[in-house]
Structures are given as C-alpha cells and as structure tokens.
Length: 113
Image (cartoon, rainbow, N blue to C red; front, side):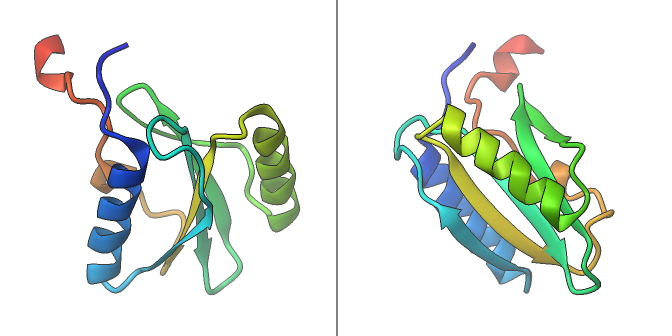
C-alpha cells in the first residue's frame, strides 16, 4: 500500500470543499489524526441513508440502506477500529454517485498508471 495523506488533513479538506457546494457536512466521530480509516454516512431529507467505506483508491457503498442497519454497521466498525473517523454528508439524494467527487487519500496513484 502506498503513502496516504494524513486523515485529519484529508477530512478537513473534504468537509470544506463539500460545504462550499452547499452540502451539509460534519464530523460524527473524530479518529486518529494521522492514520485513521474513514467512513462516510450519507443522508438525505427524504430519509434515504447510505455508507461509504474506503476501498483502495476509491469508495464503495456498504450494504446498509436504512437507519437501523447504518447504526448497527457503524457500531460494529467503532468496536473494531478505535482510530476510525465518521463523517456525515446531507445530500439531496443519497443514490447519486458522490464517490467520484471525494477523491482518494493515496499519494501514489500516478505511480500505478
């Protein structure tokens, strides 16, 4: 696995960028500033929910689409990883593919091409 940006720096940059687009974004759980993993909770005003997890150089959706399954998933992950960051984005529609706009924390993506 290649080098990664520090998690705290990456999270702050994503929150700033997402907020500038008018999307509500907040930290639900602050993890290790240097190397914590990141989960992103997606929510919309119609009650839609979802979770994104880091998947190599991108993001993958977790099979948790209702509030109860999202909460259960997050609780399990917190038990396994005390360094975990959880951020929440309130979007117009959680089914829209925001994964492409989040970018990656990996610094070596050009080396793999």
